[in-house]
Image (tube, rainbow, N blue to C red; front, top):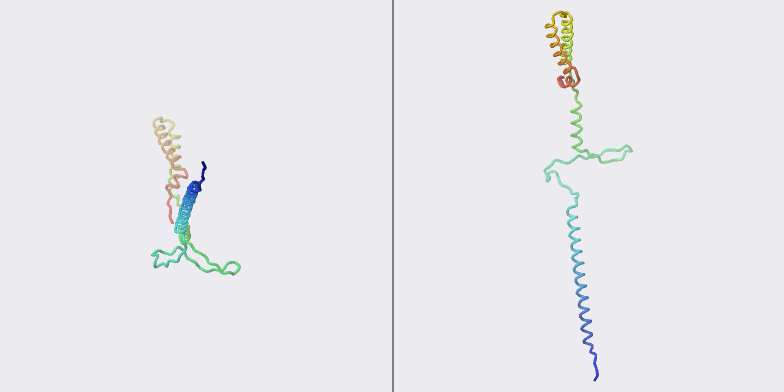
Length: 168
């Protein structure tokens, strides 16, 4: 009895292994192509989102120009382009408007405080002159306490600022 080895048996095993390898290679190639396509899409979207410089005339844009450019010479005599930002120009205008002179007059408040001080002195003199009459002294002391209280409220910088007259 003799045994024969057929090559077809070996060939089928190698064919199966080769098919698996080619299938795996195809899968890898498809995955690689899909990854490349995805990267290209990302690049394209990034490029589309990137800011671009382009000329738009003022008639087409319908808006005021964002700034003014003018030609000047620097300290060496070379020409240079200077950009004047309108926002900064507005800030300068506001600063100039704010630089207007204003005067604050506290004369009325000062006179009111002086009157209260004089009234306090008069009441103190009246208290000294009315030493014999207890009822009158108590009444004058109440008036003196009221005047001192009012004076303490008004004789300070806060009250002066609040009641000053501002002209400008």
